[in-house]
Length: 261
Image (cartoon, rainbow, N blue to C red):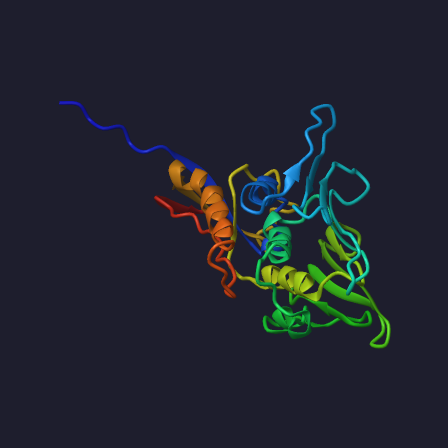
């Protein structure tokens, strides 16, 4: 009598706070843009970069290793009601946060910018005013939000993750003309208390200090781990045929067995 082999599992780390979880898999952003949102990609195998352009050719997402700069850059051409704008993200910016912005950009039923407040999601979880003008700081002091300029002439937004005053981890920058709904989507994802999944070991973590980062390791069925991205693609593709004002829920990976580390 033969016995059925046990289902294959993979180790997945679930990290909080999410802004210190490391960058994650770029495919979480690039694959849905291409397959679910119709963005086209340039194929240049000799260059270590990814270029994706929107169907209307107004938006361009560039992923390019920049040791001293931002790895992700999203640019958008000027429109009748808005000047050209940009957003950029450092290499260690979690892909879940960047994806919140790109998902909002590609939403067939966009929210009105006037109804969006990038400060609100962070204030709701206890971020407090920072010493810098127009700024907020997280309760643990590892993340900051700041807007340059003044009420009369508002400027660019900056979100920075740090480990001490002399150790920046990543920075996200949103130009002054970036739609407010994108900045708000980013800060809402930053405020989300749910852990993010990482299946590439702990080398991606900017710190393993248990006083700063909580890591829970679980054995997850491989079929679920592999299917998370496919489910994300299906959810985003469905927006084209069934518009919804509700945000796409974050994908959680079911676990077979769990153990804390």
